[in-house]
Image 1: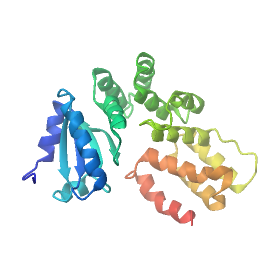
Image 2: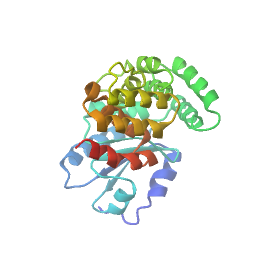
Image 3: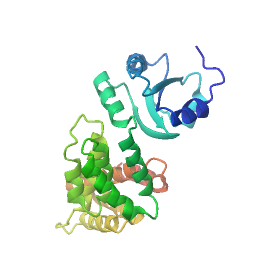
Length: 266
């Protein structure tokens, strides 16, 4: 049945101030969607009201799909307190879905973690980082906290950052993000012994990252790709991808450098 006059802000963002909302962007012509949907519905029915499911048919609401950056379905997003908490694309099996819900459905501890994360982007960053370290020690059951800390310190303390994400194994929900931390740690600890142009540029990128000069780091990495894209097991290419992931698709540096990066590969 078509959702007439569906108000996303009211049904999802406002409602998520009372209970977490899981939004399933789907289509009746999408096979993986038809696999995932019933699992989500079953898990919601078993949740005891700890979260609610809203299904958005992208064929009926392509305006919402476009506005929310839905390029492939199924695409599932979780909202809490009016903000996006987590998302994934594709049809996950039930066991993985349960882990995802356990990881991201807000609790008092997770809300404290989110508050700390918000302060990491303010002038209070030093205090927030100290609070994050304390939180990681007090809540070893929340792997997201270790990942956030690792991501924050990877350029200053790459060895510690790698250790923080060591428990994240392949198949875990946080695997891709943990791999990104490992890649950035590898890039930051690189020491050139070749004297090659690519090696010199990677060393420059490493120094720039330690100084938080991300634009200079991207310039150097792209120069390394252009000099020798296969250098050091494709370290320049892998480093560029890791930084793009860290920035996000809409970040000005991603927009500025992505096309040049793609052209350098071919």
